[in-house]
Image 1 (tube, rainbow, N blue to C red):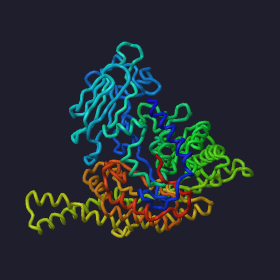
Image 2 (cartoon, helix red, strand yellow):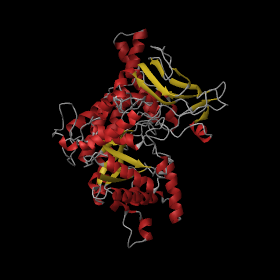
Image 3 (cartoon, helix red, strand yellow):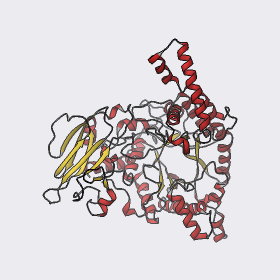
Image 4 (cartoon, rainbow, N blue to C red):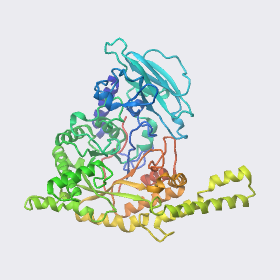
Length: 594
């Protein structure tokens, strides 16, 4: 890790707090376009080599983990095997190439959307050490390279960048290739000045009230347990075990946003205490931290639910006690964090979560009768240890599930209408084909939007905006009120994605993606946020900021950094027009700091 990077990181965290109270008062909308009291938060998309979020100037930090290549084939060894057999240093850099391998490589900027034009151009790769390293990116080098320095070009035709090490430390003196950095030429000056984050990305998220770091922390299926094994700033890539806490704090402090952290389900008490202390000392005093145990511990697609089920059976000898065990461990987490923030608990929001649509599950979580029965005189319900009750706000109208066949019928009808309209315009041949391609989903999207809004096409409003507004949100608001908790949203937004048989249907996938980025989807987001506010909900973390769509979902409000979508426009309009209605902070709390 470069000393300049570390020094800049420490300075960024320290300076934010020192300058806080000298800031002038600001209104909701400032001259610079920043919001003084935003109401909308967002989850950050996970760090990966194929991710279009690109949050760091040094894109090596989002490169894949090492891939070791056996003779004549791609792959054969992974990072874990290289580490287990002693070929990596503590930061993950390759000390030697195993005799069985021809080379070791890492992949980045893979499969980015066509519109991600800002990724094009010339990049500088620097490194320390000796050996043979090359970049396979398709574009010809724009300038000469030398030991320690390579230049390469990313063109619109690139689908992957592959950094390949075929020889390292040839003299066996410990001078292996390490400390690789990869920076776009336009960003070199900013990077050399100590900047960490991509300014194009910062400009998109700077008005978010809250950043939920669940995916950045690789919360789901996490194996982290001991503080010594946490992610480090010096890790060669952050895709291996997640973002370091120092980086997440630097981001929250930089843009002025409350961080929401998810403690690994296997984390020791010491891990939680050390994490809490670092947040207490490193987070700006005008910001609040939200903390939650893991993520969706009710959800058995994740290891944390299986762990809770096993622990619940061990503790109480009963099946179906997993969410009660989750509540007890979350309560222990809350106590640890409260102790760390003694005397300043107004900076801390302890969160417990449930599944919005699984009615009755919240009773076991908030009241945990098995826990109470252990010691009725001294055990209080878990709800008493928390500040906020988190739910989801997804809507899908089941278009990707039980209504998928109906959607296929809408698509066929829509295409027929597009063809008829084209012929009515006198179009033929390629002109007609182009018209059909441009309008083949129009009628189907209109029907789907109606169904998503209120279920009025089929008469079934389940999982629609109306279902949330008329039932789920008011019900959950009442539960939060009854337990003295604030109602917050840990994830919400469109959940229109193919499942089961619909997952691999290319026509449905294309339609779902078109629907998710249509003007109608923007209107649905406005309706969702309005319904949340009307129900008395508070912080709302939409899912997620920037991610390319696929058959697995259209989760990104933006598909890439150069994107513009009706959905994102709706989010930003609501955020600007609706200052937080539930609290005020000192002037300048949510403004960015250099």
